[in-house]
Length: 392
Image (tube, rainbow, N blue to C red):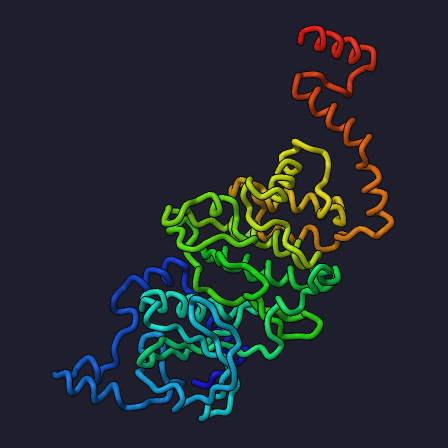
């Protein structure tokens, strides 16, 4: 099939989109990538090798049939688009059609066939959504790698669009977040959790950010599944994963994506990470959690540029308990609100949190912790404070 998918094909595939259970259960089936009839009916190893060596166009391959091909026989490799522990993504041109595409190349030395099947299958069946990268029905293997074809995005990923220490303008941030939330809400409706939300996994396809797409489903799993912690933590990793030790079992929940979206929003508006790790040993994380749990009325300094409404969203999105975090649909309630304070508002906000105010707040919290309501009549409050001091 041609690697350019029409709107009709997109709608047709959307209608046929299977449930997450069907997608993932098929990965567990050893017949998921069934050999073609010639291979299946071969009577000898020589016949098998003969059939595999016949080069067929990767455009004709399907998710049920991996061809053994030479990559350079069918594609002109232009340049690397990204590299990681998973393998690499390259820009390529199909020699037969002239189409520009991206090829994700996963080395067999570090990739299990089942993992390749899972990622390709999920990528392909989610791609009808307008904010998820197109994954074409083109998958094959070489002697050293598994390969599948993706939509090429010449403008690259979101990471390069976030000015360090500055951040993006509010309107652009809202435009991007709205689309990412839509993609994640769609995934969650299919009981799938992305588990690797970060700027590097969001492709930019329009200068004004009117079209961005979520990509990379190598870590995607079914909501409610148990997985082992195999890699380290990054700033987008939720605390329930940061706290786990290597090889410990972790419950997959959509709350992990909600947490990562909250961190992504902070990064886009500031050009900084809110913390290095969502762990109580990180001073910036601890400071935020004390405020979030209302143990402190002092807003952490790096969060003071945000409006009260956005801070309410952060409080709900970055809740320490996964089951208490808001859903992706919740973001739509905040899209028309101002997210950033003007410089004058920020200075007023900072002056209100000066030394004297902080001391009053600290005293009020301490008194409330001892059962003294500071909002009652002043004479009654003074008498209760005296009684408390005499009892010490």
